[in-house]
Image (cartoon, rainbow over all chains, first blue to last red; front, top):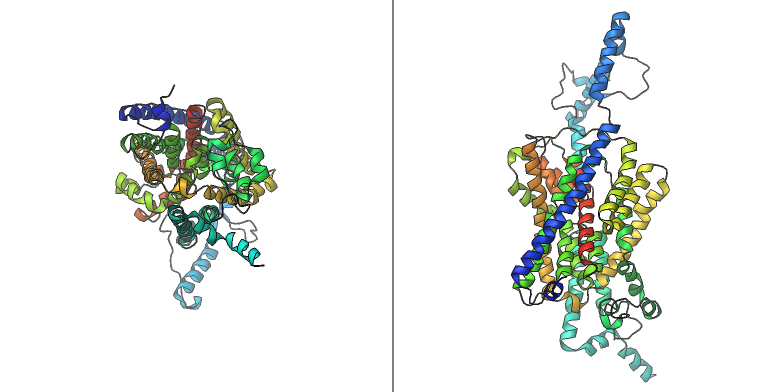
Length: 147
Length: 414
């Protein structure tokens, strides 16, 4: 099937080398793409079958809440009330404000090398998305140091 | 007593070096220098030290001056490559190797019989998280596009053979050289031990050296092939992936690959076995063993024995230079192939895909993904592309194993 020149590389004509190369490239890349496209379709089906979009779910919950709110007065306030005996870890958006101010004061004091008594936090504001600078710096350092 | 002492002197390595005489002795010294240079790169420059160090030391061991037929000889490369030592000129004489072989001969059987690379793939599978790929299925195409370099180099090797009379690469050799572009050491070794065993040392050294040089090779190509505006694109956060999806993925991939290209199953199947051990969550002990102890033991055996095949006669040839050059071409074009499709996906999605993740389609996990992350972060410090780049990166492992399967299916029986 293959010429002696193609098998050994001895006295291989350029035209034969290019023809063989081109043919193998077309067949090979087609098979590689074919297999991976099939896997891509399988993975897309995974999304349809197994994944429930939280946005849609939240929408449904919100609709349910609105219906419930009409019946239960003060329900909304109850969601945001700070529980002093909260034992579960807080989500970033639900850290009680007094605790957040204490953390920020400590952080600023530490970075300025001063006492918290010399500082007074008047206002604070998130400057860059949900990820804070310390998280980001930590992540970058980890990525750069691993492997 | 003097006779005993003379006998001892005649059996020393220095005496053997003198006995080689002229060119042979110089070649031996050159090989020892190359081995020491590779050891330097592994230890001081930290180029893939976990693999390059065993390879370099294996090279050193097999090139130490020892008299021919001495029982101290650890490796007899000719038993594996020279047809006159084989049964019917085709099959390696396992009986002879077991009876008379040195330690490295016995360990090399694991390479020759295709045992080590799939075992390494079990370990890689147990260390791989396919979550980013499952979350973003389109990124699997980047893993396919990055195999472009493999086939381009296959053509390049044949063309080089046609143009340079002193270099003779047939289709089997060209396929083994091309697979360097897959940026996957075990895959390159697996293909080469089957198709072109004589080129194994040069291809293994080239593959692992270039994998270590990915942070140097890829960034200039990435900058050349992408626009600054596109490099700054922040991609949408990936969706969470359920445990069920992660468990089903390796099983389905194995079945799909087996149905289409059975020659790739020994690599892809083992990769997926390792991944299933990890993701199932019910075989933690096995998952830990395959990604630590088993992987480390096999890596030592594989590295030392592959290095030991690099004897002066097989390594110091114009073909080795050709392989080193073509290996670099393969890496560059694989990177370019991934970036090209990355740019197309960026254009088609109207700027939702950062084309830099395309270069991660070469399967060097996780170096290639890390390079995408670093280049992206230079343009936009708040951008984290790592998880997005891991999708094409792990797809590249599957892609290069499939490309290897294609070559094996086409050329192993001719």
